[in-house]
Image (tube, rainbow, N blue to C red; front, top):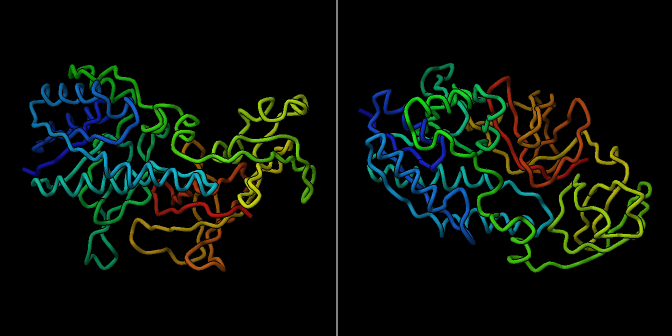
Length: 366
């Protein structure tokens, strides 16, 4: 009987994942992971731990607590702060999945005798064979529930990790998951879904104020290409991201408020200047560079190739061509249609149909 350690977060998804695995005949253990936080948050609060323990008790499975606070702070939170200081909009959930949830968790579980680890992620893993059938390949696919699909955040998983990971709820929709939990009498059946980044319980702006040395500077409106006009002051470039509209108004430049709405166009770190625009079309771009590339199969597809490209988690994919870039270690992505606010630091993820083939970090729109 294969032994599976399931990451129990205290939410309904991971609870049902554990339930389904037990019903399938696996030897299941539950694990609650503790992450760094400045104050109580929904992801790893005492209440979440209590619910996770209740689920384990209900299912009659062993329960463990893994303390990853130090590692989470170093690998996820510090990464987020460093990238934000560089003017980027990072995606710490991608790093957390790679380094913590399917890195440290997997490593510790295997030291304790696990054959697999499992989570409540909405994604699907399939085992295939190469053409020569000499080795197995594990592929990653979107979940059945496209509204809840989380494959976008898993693009950095490799073959070693995927060979040891199970996603039990990938073939279910969220309503189905909640119904399974209700019928089984799980204490998490009505638990609310977690929102936003787990370590930002204080709110993004308060968190940045507390952890970064912010430097106010000028706000410049791009009147036309290459021509800018200083119209106000910003409290720190770290507070803003490309395409942002909310918070761009009277608090920064009361004199020009009525001429909006305004959008963040880009950030000039050398001049510490926030550049905004009143023209949404200024935010459109069709080409961008992608760095820090990773391919799920372990091998880059032959360039150039066409794929569906996803540039943010809650946006539909758009057809694009991925080709060689002049910059070493990067590829050039050309989209079929211009997209708004292609943001450096965010993930660009490539799909062939439902299969996630790889991804990278957006380096520079063109």
